[in-house]
Image (cartoon, rainbow, N blue to C red; front, top):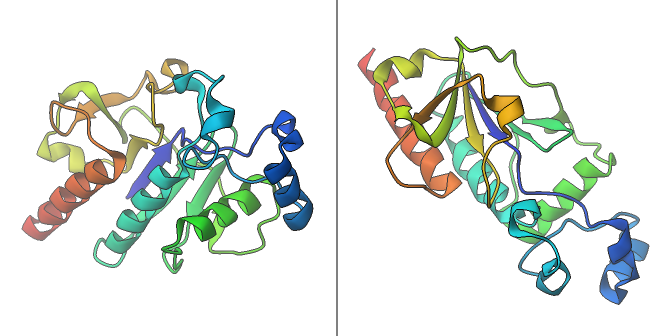
Length: 201
């Protein structure tokens, strides 16, 4: 069973932000760009449309913390997250930091190709087909118990907007409830129901 958090709202600061004194100091000290964080870089984000912002590492952080807890109770649960260009797998033995600051540091290493830990690895997505993949969207049909028999479950990691239709339009779209949910809430609801499904087999 694969949980895929796709199109996550994470990115390193762009080159033109390096003229900012605080970012320049951070870059000089750590030898890498900081991750964009909307709680820190609000003033620099004003010129970027909401749908284009990659400023919510907290969404991925909270969601991975929650989902990684289920790896202890759901056999063979694998966790992946992807940006526009890269995919990473979170190993079951990974102990994710509770601190957002430390988690941002891990993301910086990953995106700048400086990561040396085997606990979060560069990866390819598992084989995704129309028959074995569900994509969660409020525009989809209602979740059916037979959906739990699929292998791949895609959740959006973005803060605004929606999935890239060119990349994901072929997959079955399913909704958990009628209204939008925060990613971590959607994961909790789905994984809780999946655990119940396993117990009833």
